[in-house]
Amino acid sequence: MSRFDDLVFEGEAVPTEGWDFSWFAGRATEQRPSWGYAKLLADRMAKAEAALDVQTGGGEVLASVPVAPPVLAATESWRPNVEIARRNLATCNCSVVDVGDTADLPFPSDHFDLVVSRHPVITRWDEVRRVLRPKGTYLSQQVGSGSVRELTDFMMGPQRDETHWSLPPLATTAGASPMAAAANAEAAGLDVVAVRQEALRMEFHDIAAVVHFLRKVIWIVPGFTVNEYRTRLAELHHFIERHGPFVAHSQRFLIEARRR
Image 1 (cartoon, rainbow, N blue to C red):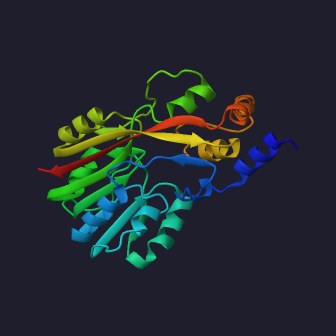
Image 2 (cartoon, rainbow, N blue to C red; image 1 turned 90 degrees about the horizontal axis):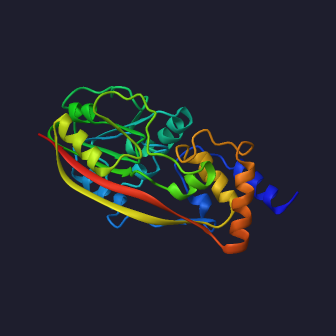
């Protein structure tokens, strides 16, 4: 096989379960936001009495918290990740619940003093507000609009900013603007106390990293398969071989809100 075929095969073979990006070491890089979400999460968790992590993935980030609150729960929608999260969070006495991204949260009203979420696919602001106690806090690092747009446009051609989601009221998808998220939070009955946003440089050093990334982060090229995009992958492979890494930029924003 050619080097291109070898790399594509390698990128296809890596499991996509969980939210661990360690496989990309030496093959792709991404700047981290200056606010340090994991550190903020650890600080908030240490002070909480009851906390919820919405769309926890494989629980990898939540498991890094040094001090967990007495009551800790997490939700996840993808079944393979649910089992990984339960293993990763077993030592935290965390209850991991299988919940759809658009579904109501299966918890009583006024139950948590802290709700968090890192890169949620959808934010149900009405449900966040409902399960928070009065003066409770929501802290979330989210994917901003146009994230990794350079790769999307290369693979699919220039895209218009449209959403094809059928959403409940007061819900925001990944790829929303900070202004839209803040507006929905306020409309749901939360007071937004902080919003920060940054564009972060990403570099893909080989086509295996691109293939694995597109399989793992499914909203960058919806419906991605190697067979359908083989021609574009080959063109990108040759570009990287001749000119060095393919550069894109992830968009991230941090939002913190409190229940009135």
